[in-house]
Length: 297
Image (tube, rainbow, N blue to C red):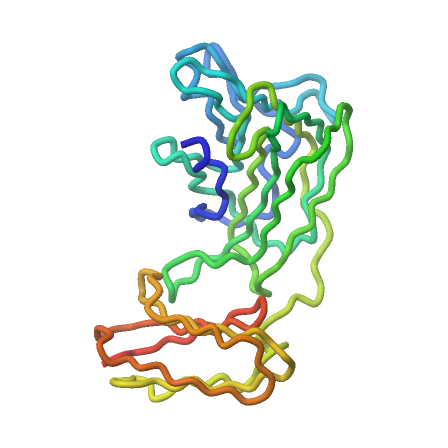
């Protein structure tokens, strides 16, 4: 259960009106829940652990900037074991123990910056993770636009400024972002802590790779297809090529790892035996992707 919440790869996002600001980025705003307070715009595990009078997310004062900061401490909770000090910029699905939503965001920042203090207990290692996504209406799923994951090594016993660079997989503008702050890794250890303040996105990326930088003349025929479909492309420079045929739910039907290709490339996929319907061909060249709609009849 605790490992699941720390896996950002499984995050799904919801969207609302779009704006480009990290909610409550200075952790100045908190809502009283009676016996404890929660940071506005950030979900955590306090509602799960309040029955035992234990809270892994609390308000620290004064802040690195301002009057408050986010204080995450992994703690032992009777009947639950060690619960991680974790906060998500959105919502956590408490039943599935996964982050399930982020906040609307349409920028292309170069990095996440802020101030932190942290220390791990034993072999524990906390992390800060970011993922930017965009809803793909054709595939009915979220495409990852950029991500970052910074494992906390060593310790920072006083406020230090940090910069975490994002790695972009697409030149598309995202529509959602999520930030995960965790005092612990996949196996939480009591008393590991992470304090965070003054978060912001900074810089603007330039020269994002798109598939046009690697390949040209991508063609899939015949379309509609009945028995076979042939994919042709031209790799303008040596590129690692992968072809994936997926259904409308995102389920992988066929995958071809072509390896490193330069020049003209052709591959024929046998579609006999594949159910009739709409599919999507994902052509990946290095870190760039193009998607084409395929009909099998």
